[in-house]
Length: 127
Image (tube, rainbow, N blue to C red; front, side, top):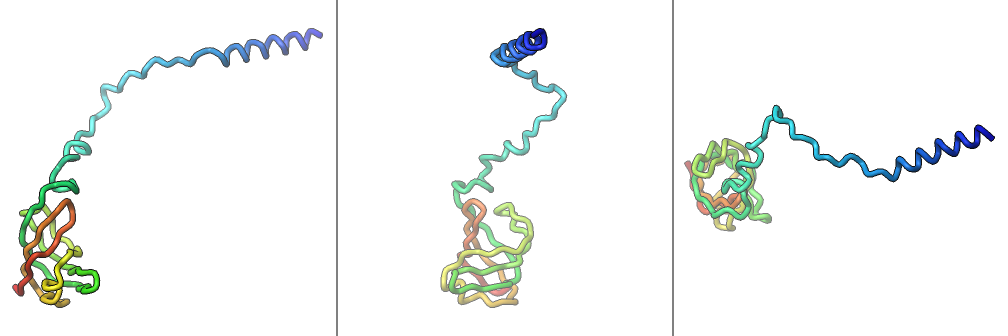
């Protein structure tokens, strides 16, 4: 009988503790923790925002692929400072007239319009 009373008392205390509100005091911020402003500072940057105003520039590079069906030309291009792009290989949208002027292996100069991170070649000519 004593065991039963002790067990019931323990169970009662355990159940009563379950109904208590948890300590909800807000944690103090860690004053020593660095704040990463770089990840949010450029969030509205026009170079990466898809709603950014169109920018134009020109580049130099080598045509690596032409896809007439998709209306695209891939160019391994040098840096294009006017639009803030480093040297890279990328595919650009292009009109059928521009696609017809491009051939794999050609070194070309090209003009482009950039909206967000996507570019469209507006003119292409041999370098």
